[in-house]
Length: 423
Image (cartoon, rainbow, N blue to C red):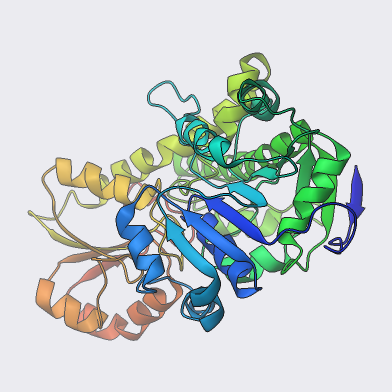
């Protein structure tokens, strides 16, 4: 493996001027915006016609001001066009979702397959095919290489094939896409170097070149590491629940050890990465992923555990009206994919509870003033499931009014989410 800065585009090989980004969602659109703002001709390809139109007329609302600024810039207006099908170009970046099938927990690569099929008619010798989508190990070698070969291309000779998994955090995409290091695995070292040219116009992080399998494994291992550590914290919380002990302070004490850094327990794990990526490792080697799959199941069950505790806390209320704050999968983001907060609310609604759910970041669920919202809904109980910074501050400011109005608040998103058994 090599570790390099971003290579100068004037080096050996073809100059990259026109780039197709297949998939303009959470990951593909920020890439397309950065490239277009840097002066590259970009075709953003998506099957969602409404999204294509919103990108082209610059009416799309993004939750990060810096990305919104890029979208509305003159450079992007001049250099980016969104379409429902790709065009000829120098490079093609695949940035489409790879969800799980249910209940099998197997990767669904249909969008990746459709993307490869869509670009093949537009490929020519010397082009770059770079996969950003998170994929199971050996997907490039066993799936993409044969498709390109069947189309008459010799990957690594006629066209360059690489895998460069994204490493960005929703809510901080603008900064991370520029400053995070890039791992780029190529079918050949030359393919990895050529794929680096895609990111050269804006990337400030280092580039680490490797083979495609290592790049595939790297992303999955990163997210699995985080998922397993979250599961450990949640299991500590479950132990504390059995012992009638809030583990928040105990975790703080344990973290005084210089080589210990236990995470905070939570209501579950959401987003498009952590609940999904560990299963990709299980798909290729189920015999040796016992710890990984156990951690995944612990985190998957946390919404049900928290829901059970909420039911217990509500046992003394007579048909309570609940205001739930939070629907995103994590604080300070508008991303609600795989959100445990939504799962908890769905479970409670099936129990017949009267629930109004709001989230300041989610379209269609926002509000202007929490105090006004509370006056309109007149809840007897507020459940804070997501610890959005401003929401927490609002609740703190309204504390005296809530007490006076006999409105209880359960700040489940903070500290140990498992409510005391004898609340």
